[in-house]
Length: 284
Image (spheres, rainbow, N blue to C red):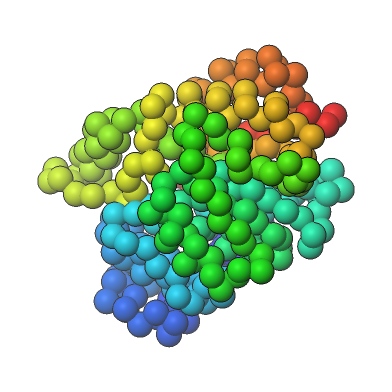
């Protein structure tokens, strides 16, 4: 976990229950006497997120419908901190930073975390109209800093989102993992079997199309993201993307070499889970 992550020492469940009393129903006591929640329960994760966002990130009325992606807050804020480090390395960090979140989703997590962690201004983009409407509601308390825009053409990622003469210090993206609904369900069944659950259950962090899957999955989406980024090389300082599958990296490096970008890979770790961010720029 990033050293500036305020959740690095765990959760203050007493304070969290005060801002979201429903969380109390999901508290479990571990064998060592410490409080926790059942992280296999999507409802428990949802109410933990509501409490964390209310207590630490000024999002007191945040909510999403059931089955929508409810991402773990510590991992998401880590991405924000590593982007801040990247901007610092390049003398780009300031309160005037503007960022673009590709695939903001209904939860609007990254813009909310970015605004409250660094006072950046954020634009969140998504192609799903229902997600857009929910994201706008979640962003409403931060309307001076967060703008939500809809992408009406799935073939293009940046076109119509980045306006002429508009500049972003960075873009970020947490791309869909899977290539289809069937693949997502298959992997969820495998996960449940691996932890000893043999009945069909929903994902603990929820999610639906297009939050979890798209044609070609992560590999094809990121290659398209890289290819299309070249057309906006003067309008974005650093393009970044979260990569879940390490095996995909060589494909992405080859694509980045092809578009003549400079790039780096930033490792991320959350407990036993390892992921990474690819960051690239055309301003060497």
